[in-house]
Length: 238
Image 1 (cartoon, helix red, strand yellow):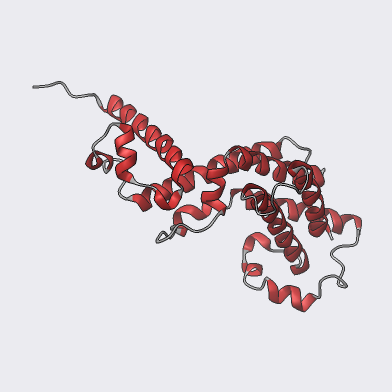
Image 2: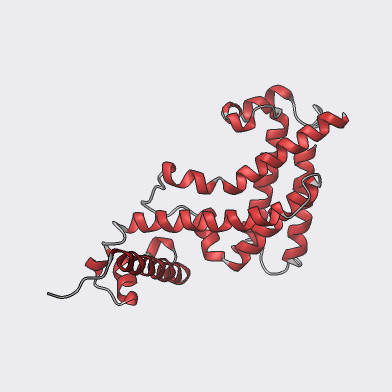
């Protein structure tokens, strides 16, 4: 009877194959895009029969979900470390750490960014119960920052998002569903609107850069993003 690998060795072998699977899938993602991801082609490049791949992944959608959650966690952890290195009282520096690290990661991993923030993959629906937690890692850092900005403004009686800029009723209507989220408790609706607009501005600037939506002759993208980030921060603080 042939000797079998002990449980520890089997677990190690499985982990190695899973790492290779994600590495190969990411390579295919970069070459062909998420919509064209093929389990058969990935298995071929891994030196496996297609049927053998199903020991590690149940379907193309399962693989996409794993790619998305893994990528969200890598991005979130990179941004978290950068933001944690900044003084808690320097809100602008924390915002800059979040947005700059986000951009640096996206520029270094454009195909991963496209998977998370680009066009939806046809016939694929990400399971919220699996993807929401890692997908909210960066947003949770932003929410904590907005709480801290608001607390500092209240403590120092600094002017906050002027009603002249954001009508109370209109702001509340715009984010009515969001305001029921316990994570946003205590933050004025006007400030939530400002933060939401700020983050959309950051994402829009980054997407226009990575997807070349503005053409080649619009100046240095790093400087342009830095200016956009500064403008976005003003939307948060009011």
